[in-house]
Length: 158
Picture 1 (cartoon, rainbow, N blue to C red):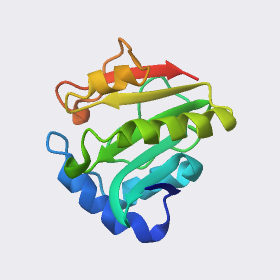
Picture 2: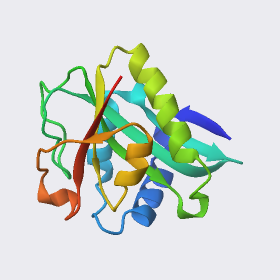
Picture 3: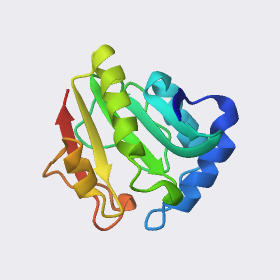
């Protein structure tokens, strides 16, 4: 089991996992995912077990209260001291093994070391309880409909 920085060779596996995991939200294109990865690559990881991709996490710097729009490259001049956790996906065969929590713990350590002040995310696909267990709290702001009907903006201080 290992957590590794995302490298170019991992993208086909990431796209495959993304299409498996997201049923209530359309998957994003490779171009859009790579744009978000390139913003803050030190905060983007994969989780492998016996060489098999079991999960990934994409997070990038951000400077706005509202989350970035899905399906779009990040706007210029939006780097800041907020870390936006764009995506955490775990293979269905690996649910309840603590992989998401391990990736989050790793991210918090890296983000703190890089000087980020908080992490924000949009909870999708009924994942709000998981995020609350990771220390996130709901925010009142509405999010773009592209995130899905039950999407919830959340944050946690670092």
